[in-house]
Image 1: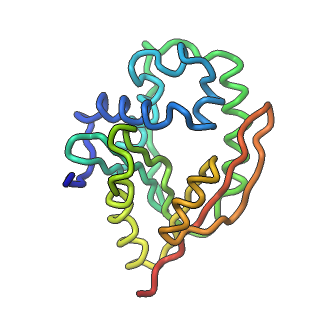
Image 2: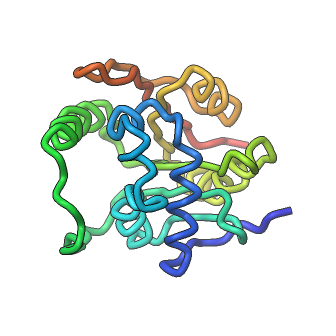
Length: 194
């Protein structure tokens, strides 16, 4: 049985690889990075800027072997001053256009009330269906239940909607992303009153 713990900067390379493999068929990630050459470049490099931000929030959980990861953003996140990587290649114009399209849509569908945000959860395909996702969400479920706060996420597949429904999430909104982007669902898990 894997142990869940907070992720550290020392885990970054392994977490980037895990997330890259976990999201290799994800509709949003493959809309942003449609070619294998883009997506798999650098063995997870596309995930590095994301993990730099998530780890700074200090609410990213992983398994002891880094085969699963969940990155959460707290209700009142601190303002982060993260300098861009000077060695990073320039972002292509078409990718910037897709980011500029999806960002405002996600913001418009985010609940206005204070809530936790599950920004990413993924398990390497070789270790899926072993309950690791549930184990990674459990610490924040406990905090949300204790503090009376909702937990919000976005997803892009009907299968994921069904999966998250088992944990008490319900569809709050859904929308289509322009530029041939995916259909998305915003899901909210209210605090449990057990």
